[in-house]
Length: 248
Image (cartoon, rainbow, N blue to C red; front, side, top):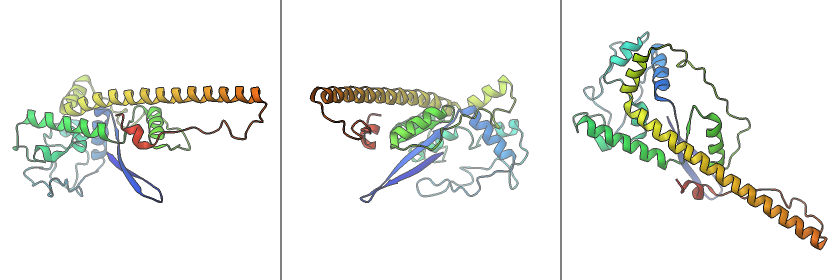
């Protein structure tokens, strides 16, 4: 899911798009359990290029009001289930492939364009996090937007999806159904770790520079017998948002 966050000042208000990604198999199982309990997306218009898809372009997977009680096998067997590769589709520019019109181009070309579009949009986002790395996600969010959460993020590894007992064959089939999401997630994990380590390195460099400056000031005070100024060593210099994001 993609979010839009805003930061305002007296002069202007800036909007930045952010998103959170999840392991594709866990996300798929979580959506299946959600649909099994009666959830639907009937109010979603799926707008693309100014229009919603036709029933032929986007058929439904069930005949009734919802898909309550659907088995995992039934959920996987619906070829036009929007749960398949949902993260790539939500991040990509669908207008590049004719929106939901699957006859616009062949499947392999469509898949390649969607995946590359999703990667580009993810890379250009102000921030993205990964649910399996909550603490690192919090660290990057706070450093990117120069904000501080009042409490640390908690890593919950026990979810509805984690409680689903599936065999290796079912897991492999889910990975095949979500082959684009699997590739996107590997790309996202690599990019996420690069950003995390780079930001950590910059923070260490600033901390070392701050300590060197503090020692230099202390030596000068001792050499000249100057009284120590209140708050002389407090505060840190932080980069503004744009200078930090531009590196990516």
